[in-house]
Length: 352
Image (spheres, one colour):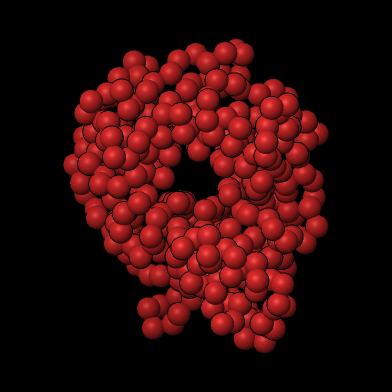
């Protein structure tokens, strides 16, 4: 079986990011490959398929867990390290050399290097927040690559970290808590435990929190517990969203919310909890949703599948774009050496 066929069958895209110019979409997977899609290709007519994607493989054994974009470089979160790659938009090329990298500190009692599971980049500063597998959020200065401080309190790995313009940081973790922090204080300022609320608790799914999102007034979270909207000041649950599976992604989009995870549909709800769109996807699980409204309105949904699901109106599935099998120069590429094929076969067995 060819390398490309194996990767196509077991492709798992955990991360996506949009360029600062809002003209390119980046997608990264657990095989360590980064795909780049020119968004103008999506404006072609229905009879003309989008052009092929570009692919930029990373170093051996790099698993791409999360992505962010700042100015002209792509930020990659993987096992034990965060690094930046220069993006040349004129040539549509991603640097093969790391522009910079920051290693996540290894704790004294740690038995393994922690994964970087989530990145949030403050739009007002050169500050990056990394939620990691050791239960710690690290605040990193992109000016000098220094870990400025950390946020400790979670007792299990952090799945999601986001922030707002008020200097607040919100994190959700495997320990079942959503914690609120501020850059001005060392300790957390508040905490909620959705699994302790009877209307949210789902014993069969567990207590983990897979995703957190915030806007000016509301907090949205879900995981094992049902997805719910909380008032940001009181942290009281005001609305329960009846998404049937475990929640891995959620976000406020326009005047509603989008939720995806371990289900064959991604769903859109009003802020009052009414289902307004039920969008079929072929992912075994959905792990990433990115979107923008201008200059090109687009939403891309990714997960355990070889396809990106594209929405142009945020209500209906517009198209599906293959990743492996749809790359420039792929037809002329070699099948890969025996060692890499053995690594993929090993991944195949562990995924089964």
